Length: 193
Image (cartoon, rainbow, N blue to C red; front, side, top):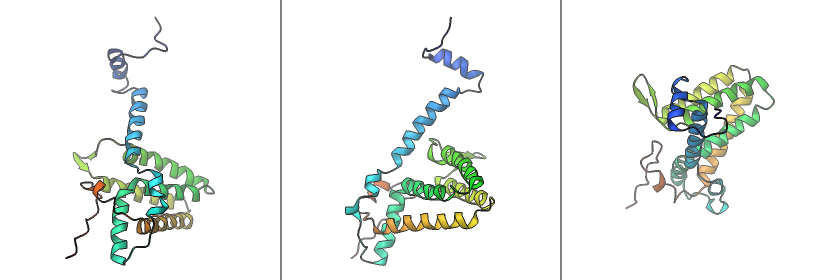
């Protein structure tokens, strides 16, 4: 009897998964879709990021610094996407670099954006900040080895400037409370006496 077009039950999927090392390709795709939805849930709405009513000059350099910290925490996923898109666009005319970048993006997807469990290395849990830093450094080194150094550094600088300018100008009053307890949470402003 053919099982084409039927939904597998838990017993048949367990038997099919046993010969594939514990997970079928469909299970992997389902988990990746679920992780993608979860990862995108940590991304803030683009409307919130582009809200023109929330833009204003900070009254002082100290306030600008606090805004940058709060907004980097609040919009971390959005800012990472912005910088990666800027780098991607700069590599459109560098085919070898673009291929390396796309391979690195697979690593980013698996190890940062779509991951639902912490990374464990040699029996120790690796923090999200370390994973982010290592992925950034490895991606940068591999891209620099392709010979597009000026192009890559310029695009990273443009992405960095875009992120910092937005973070300094976006009023962050509503952002701080959302991020308490996260690894990248900003230091709350001290009440003035």
